[in-house]
Image (tube, rainbow, N blue to C red; front, top):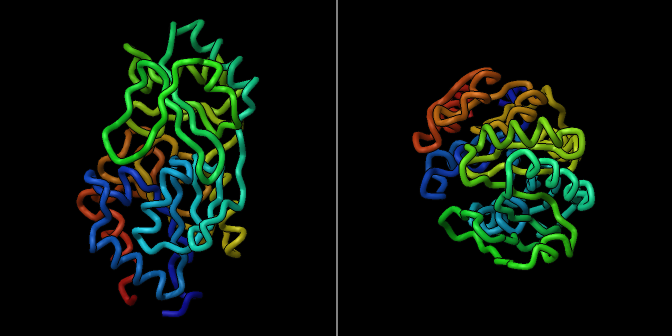
Length: 271
């Protein structure tokens, strides 16, 4: 099968809850399926909400040397060259105004933020619950420290409101100032207005000479909805959020059951 005969020339995969299993590993079957389709001429691109410092180790472990879209579309990263090609930062004045509007509705929020750059720290404020795992964070106490350097995104948590409700409130009162998305459990984010995984993926695809019509995308959370809207075919994992399942073209097995490989083996049987 030549590259021109492939059903899709670009395979876009989210990371957490999609390509990664619950133990943060990638199965042998998934690796083999992706290796087979890329050997046949398709390109695989990771599209993740994680900023580059939180994803570099995974890409290196994969032996991944292509482009990766990171930071909810704000960063295009060349994994083989360990080089940041593009990066979009959050207007800190607008973010501060948005935060004030949200807290006027919800009361005080626990905050974290992702600083820009290849070595950008993730700052975590008082009360913010960090998921267990190997991802490094830096604690802060002085609120001024949060705003002291360029940021890619701001993370919000509320002691009582669930993620869906917090995201809805944030969008209602501040959606004209910043982008709002829910990227996982306990992960509600404020982003530069208009920035989505779709914008980052479209930039990366253009660098590869590919288009939306060439693309199949895999994901599991509401932050993948714009990517599904851009790609020709969107595949939600069995463990996906209901909002993503509602707009998916199909639903595959879960991330722990090789859902990506299940679809790729069906679509690329001759590979």
